[in-house]
Amino acid sequence: MEADVRSADAGVDLLSPSYWLVTGLEWQGDGESAEAAMAVAPGMIPRDALSHHARQVLGCADLHSRKYGQRVVFFSDLTRMFAEAGTSWSQLGVDWERGLRELSAGEFPVMLLTISERAYMSICAPAVRGVAITPDGGTDESADDDRELVRQAVTRQLVADWPVYMQRIVDARCTRTAG
Image (cartoon, rainbow, N blue to C red; front, side):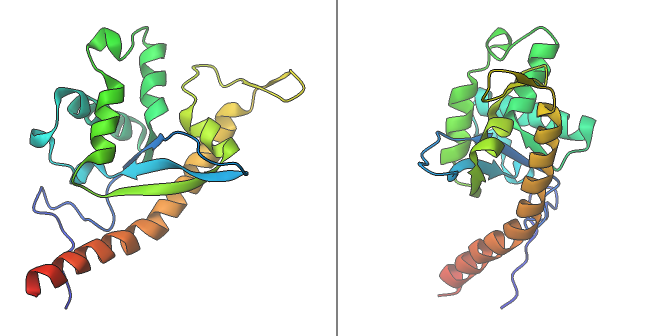
C-alpha cells in the first residue's frame, strides 16, 4: 500500500522537509561518538499546539533558515544570532530550555543522531567568534570552518536517513488504521 507522504499542513513533504532544526542533547558517550543530537522538521510541527516558548524557537529557526538558505539550522546558530545582535533568549522572554524539551517530547517525528565529540562541539557552541581552544592551550581559528563541515555532514545524513525514517512511520500508521 503506497501511503501519501505529504502532510495536510501546507503540503509539507514528510520525506524531504525544507529544513531541520538540530540541537545537542546531553553527552552520554564514553567513546568518540554518542547519540547526542536530535533533529526535527519544523515545517511538520503544528504550531497551535505548542507553548509560546517552543513556537518562538521554531519561528526563529524558520527565519534563520530562510535568511541563510540552510537545510540544517543548529539551535546554537539562533543563540549566536541573538548574541551578535546584543540580545538573548531571556531578554526576549523565551525559556529556550522549556521550548526544546517540548520539541523533543512532542507528538511529531524526532530523529536522534549519533555524532562525534568534535561534531557535538560544533553543533552546541554558540560562540560568536569562531575560535576554539586546542588541546595544547592555543587557539584554532578554523572553528567556523568545522561548523560548516559538520553542518554539511549532518545535512547529508538527514537527506539520506530522514525519508526512510518517515516512510516507516507513515507505513506503521497506515497499517494501524487499515487493521
